[in-house]
Length: 251
Image 1 (spheres, rainbow, N blue to C red):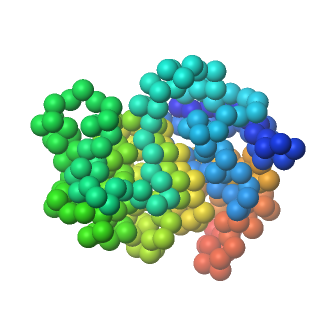
Image 2 (cartoon, rainbow, N blue to C red; image 1 turned 120 degrees about the vertical axis):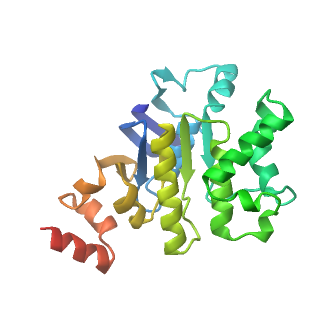
């Protein structure tokens, strides 16, 4: 579980995060949504330590990440997996070598065990047959699945995903959503996903934090979205005709 308390972040005179309180749960796909410029990317960067908050706490199972020493943070990051907006794979490495990379850098496993673990993760995302290929030889959706395999290869407790469906077609996006949801439940990870994809909100939104102009505006799950009365949330989620019609039918 990750908990943030009274989280503020300013850049000079500009306050981007304005006292956010929220909890992200184990075994749940926790989504952060908001309009462009709402602060969701800055929030994610504060969670993983790429930025330090101006004020407030980031608690990983009651451990305050903000006040940790550099050594403690390095150890903490070994419990985290990251999936970037672009798959961020190494073009010169094979699919298998890309997945093995965190193990090569941070584990004490033998080479044979590292290969076995990486292959197990590739099998989990249904890509074992692509292990000898290079990123340029596989589709964008397959690259995202490789990124997921790499993110879970160290068996993280916390998984962070920045716009994992960016650039993907709707069908492939659904595959990625279902994979992330299933893996989260299977490994009981705390998964946090930054997204602007409303299909993800309605499909895998176990816990949804909606931020607006740097403040927590609403929090709930995908079933609560349909009956939400928050106008700002409705303007974001039901901007398309399809979702607006779904909401009208639910009344």
